[in-house]
Amino acid sequence: MGGGRCPTGEHSSDADADASSSDESQVTKLPAEEQCADRLSDYARARALLNSRDFFVRRYKPGYFIDDEARDEKFEIPETTTLLLIGDPGKGKALLVSQIKSVFDDVWSTPAPDDFNMTPGWGTLQEHMILKDSTSICVSYTPCWPDFFEENHTVLQDWMKNGVCHGNSKLKLSLNKRRMVNYVILNLDAVSILESIDRKDDRYMDMVHDTFNYPFLSFRGNRPAVVVSNGDRLSSAELSSVLDFIKELLGIPLCQIFCIPGIDDYHTELNIVALLRYCLEKADQGLPLKQKGLQEEQELKHVIWKGEIYSDLVIDVLIVCICFWIFWNFGRSIGLFSLHR
Image (cartoon, rainbow, N blue to C red):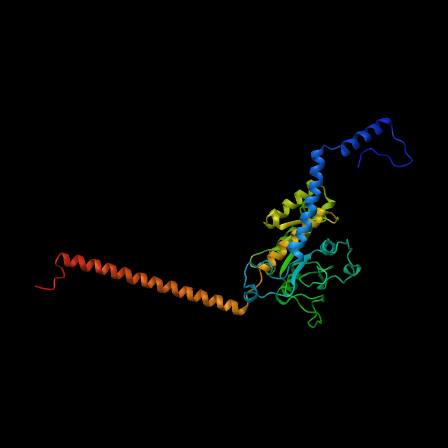
């Protein structure tokens, strides 16, 4: 941890040794309050990660975030919540899936080699169940297929309308079960964004903007979550500039942007859990109503509409009657409506 330490076999000057000793003493002899705060910070991060995993994801079932006791009767609850991960090939999608799985497997796993050896240009999808022995959460993505090109939007539209399945989803006949997409994650490479900013590459930025705002990727107005990968390859200032640029380009708050570097630490894992919680909430909020529930809701709205019309009519009749009664009594008081001549 100390600075100025020389490799084995080399000799440093006395000044360097003094500097090294001074640096190490500054690191190891922290004030008691700072040492306590540092340990507390590590403990707080560890507890936050543990609590987030246990309460928000390990107990998650599709529809969990719907605040309605009758959700099973009202909503179309799928067996699996399917998240579609899109983005440019070779920009961190496979690593992101591996990171998400490793948070719950407690093992840092590397992407399978097959993920990088598929034929590009085909709508080949990889499905990954996130939790062991559970089909509650699934992430599908295209390892080597560029999702940003406008000509590929028709394939995205097919996935959103007809569902996704493991393997080549362009084939009409498939033995794999198709799953309806419940929410979308857009993966952006921090290095590519920074290079585009420096080159003023409007074409790439326009493709990112158009893909993010593609109507079929929206769920009841909820646009995709944005993941910024490879941020660890940039300086803090450069990464901050990239995040601000994405915020302005897509018109979204920073809470919808998740910076997930390719390193294994508490901060990365907490961001991954936060990303999953955000996506699962949005996915549950976008679940469609059952046809019966939808019909009942429409009938209830119709009854309410009728009641409002009849209540307005009753009020209008009462107002007319009151006005007539006032006019009649006033007329009689001045002899206008006398019954005897």
